[in-house]
Amino acid sequence: MRKLLAALAAALAAVAVTVSPAGAITGHFVVDDEHPYVGLIAFYDSSDAFLWRCSGSLITSTIFLTAGHCTDQDAAESPAYARVWFQQDAGAAYDPATQIDPVTGYPDACFDSSGNPVASTDLCTTAHTLYDYGFDEFAGFPNNHDVGVAILDSPIDPGEFGALAEPGFLDSLATRRGTQDTTFTVSGYGVTRISQNNPKKTVSFRTRLMAETEVVNLTSANNGGFNIQLSSAPAQGRGGTCFGDSGGPIFYGPYSSNTIVAVNSFVLNGNCRGVSFAYRIDTQAVQDWLQSLPEVAAQWDEITFVSR
Image 1: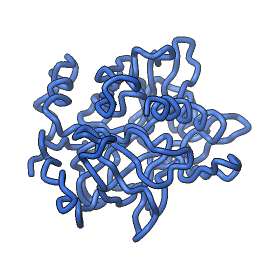
Image 2 (image 1 turned 180 degrees about the vertical axis):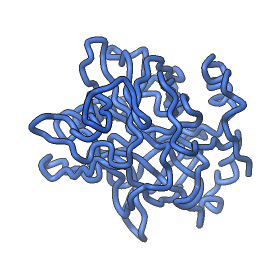
Image 3 (image 1 turned 90 degrees about the vertical axis):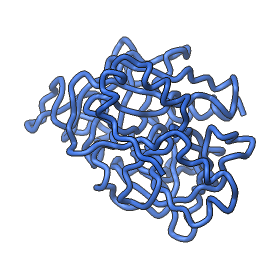
């Protein structure tokens, strides 16, 4: 399992570089116009070199929730800062020849309405303060602490924000009976389809998409009450997640839901088929950690919490 998570981080970076640097939800997906606070986040080293990209959600105007392996500050290669776009088609016009989207500036800049690089816009800004919840792909699995936060340098107001499920929100789904007929929604900018044998068959739309899915298990050896296991097979009209969706929200309910119960974490194979896993944020430990961050604590009353 430690190799699985190491491979996940490597594959995430590799897809971002060798494939067009964004993508989409897998399986049966639709354009996500429901969650304007779900953004595409790119990370850079201290020399401004692009490292990788993930997805995530604004829960206030400056608090961006994502995965810990995206913001990991203890890895050999740690990001120095990030940039976030909230356009639904944040990288749709990406040109492989110029390696930039001339509309939004992805993956290296925020562009204004005239196509000029600027520090920030209404839908794009940087984040120089990054946190991870002690993420460690080697220790304590399945509790790998895969939650991260980026504090935006300038506030963004997309009109609404994601809400957090209160601690214990998912506990009633711990049994197989509890997971039946329960719909969840995934959203992100990750790769839509990837062929292990022929990388040229990888499909990326570079846009925010969403899909309805279902929880398979919360208590297996890969979950242990810390992760939720989601069906990624495109059967019965369902969808799933892939590289680049890391950190993106798992919503409890159909497309219209804004209740975040987990952040997308890892998959079990290189072509994103079968099942995927998300790290739960509806635990007291995670929310205590969030409140321990000074920038989050200062805005704690602005976060919306949802109970069952």
